[in-house]
Image (cartoon, protein in one colour):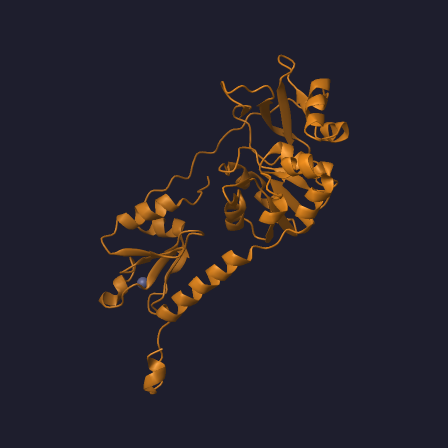
Length: 319
Ligand SMILES: [Zn+2]
């Protein structure tokens, strides 16, 4: 049983209360606290954080705080905890890397050695379908992704083995718990590995799927830091926000200018070579702008909501 926070749930919950709501940054303020009703006179003392789900009433006599899941429980608001899903066990026989897989990866700048290390192959029934096996930290095959290398716009370009447990690609090949590099596509994490950078992994189901996170949370928590090397699309780097919201350690992001106008790690490799990929990883930084914005928002909230202490000096009381 597991609940994954959805902003839509918070808004749905808020809508069950008649009190006025307004959003300020990531906080959703209620004019009246659902627990103490602001003692019938204090307004906007209660808020829920839309990103991490924490809530708090700033009235000292109320002081209710906790997580949205507890709030929902206290007011009998139903949440979807999902069912315990039984994932399929996959056969664990050794993988033979077939020539067509090696040939295809070579065309993307990835060597036979890396192809074999990660067990990339093609399907026996169709050698135009590339097979990416996902092995967990104990080297157990949990998930398989397929990619049609002669994709012509019909049907699926990428899909995965039904009812298998989504985890990160490249977990078994990680070498230590120093720096983890996360990309969106498998070809991109293979690219990072090809450049000699250890601990390169990629997400199983694209930029928007995060079911995998709960399956690898404990493993990922062991890393000192994480570098996000998502796809650069429409002036944004994918995965960044979602990972910042979930991960507990330092999260660095590859700098936009180090994509050199390309969309992902493999495109950088193919056009500018290994050194450009290595440099992009080395130059990754903790995003500054987002942190400053968050600080500013926190301060604004504090000043408005901290209980005021009378000083008997008029000017200060107006602050
Ligand atoms: Zn309250």
